[in-house]
Image (cartoon, rainbow, N blue to C red; front, top):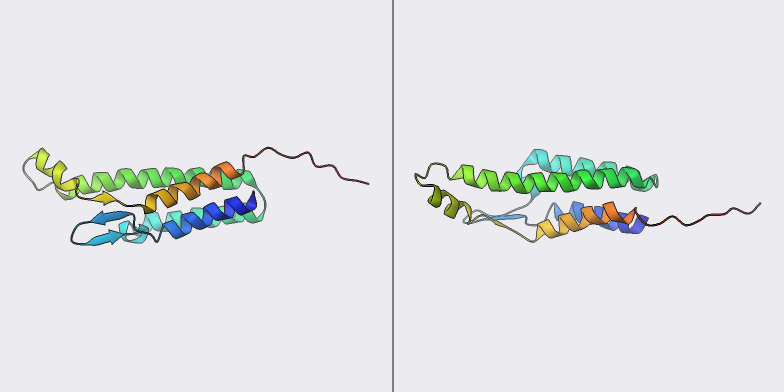
Length: 134
């Protein structure tokens, strides 16, 4: 259980350095280039999850895994809204949507979400009946 949670944590941290968004002409952006504050929040949640993994507390790991999933979903919505806002100077709505559509999501999001889901669901395995001998 700990190994799977650590693997999920590693995927979340490594995924934050992978390409998440492709902006034409500018190139690929990772979490730090998207927004510094969101990247710091992601790493802080990951650090808190390490605390839960080290102390063998599945509730803490699950809680911060869910927070990471919510953070990633919020970031995806923010990227879409920001790309629409970026082209707000265009006079027609169809042009705005067309130009905003050139901002593409990359494969790094799959790594991020996979790591967070591993952290959430690895701790939910059934408990084994532990008996101590006297």
